[in-house]
Amino acid sequence: MKKKKLIIFTDIGDTIIDEGTEVRNGQGVVIEADCIPGARTTAHALHDEGYTLVMVADGLTASFHNLMNLHGLSDLFSAWIISEEVGEEKPSSRMFESAMQALSLTEKDKSRIIMVGNNVRRDIRGANRFGIHSVLLDWSSRRSFEPECPEDVPTWRIHTPEELFPLAELIESQLEDGDD
Ligand SMILES: [Mg+2]
Image (cartoon, rainbow, N blue to C red; front, side, top):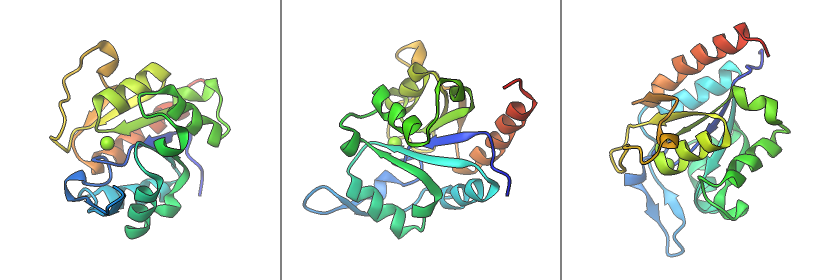
């Protein structure tokens, strides 16, 4: 299988996992939750197609291990970047820098990275400030998508996880045609 150029950073809560179904233990660790419809198959399809997936998520490490194991998603991610370990949450650049370092990426690679997330103030603002492309998944209505500043405007906007696959293919085709 040929590795794709495009690298996909992805949020988890309300991007892959439905936060409305979360069950937490006494320590605040999420012990179970449902996937958003289509998210699991899309993640597998992207991985199987040769795309690199990197988790960039705010929360507790134990929560993400529980959820990814529960849904058979653990092996899909080339790196797990979690705020509990980084010590800062998105939109902090440290989250994105950690993801870059984990994959030995450099400044010139930024043009082939997208950040997928549901949170305009964290995922979209953080990605845009960091200099990578952003994809807003607006499946959940839990948060406002209204931009507060120009950096809150996503490069692309999709409504369901399934839409990420054709978008990734489109971006990949443009990268292959491109000059880098
Ligand atoms: Mg989220």
